[in-house]
Image 1 (cartoon, rainbow, N blue to C red):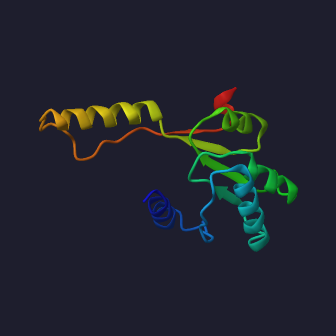
Image 2 (cartoon, rainbow, N blue to C red):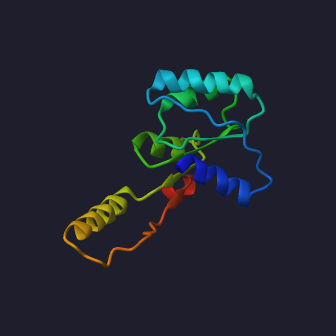
Length: 138
């Protein structure tokens, strides 16, 4: 569902962006490395890669080995030490922080209110996301 929402948002709101085929990536560094390496070989003119998951070094190493560092922008989700370091050193262009504490807090509150019989649960709960770039970390 996350991928479809991202695809729809880009297609509907940003018609100058051409989306290449989306591929699933494994969760381990070697799997990500191999997947990104194959993807870059198939699409050598890619300008940006969006990871709809937290990132590790496998994809960045594949981009560096292809000689595309500073040519391919990497955007990812979440914040961890690896992503913060990548934002600081420029290997990652941006990360969308989904505020995991508030997400978890609100989810637990809604579930327990529902279990306790509250009828005041919202149909939709919006959670603020932050886009983190290099200058946010200085």
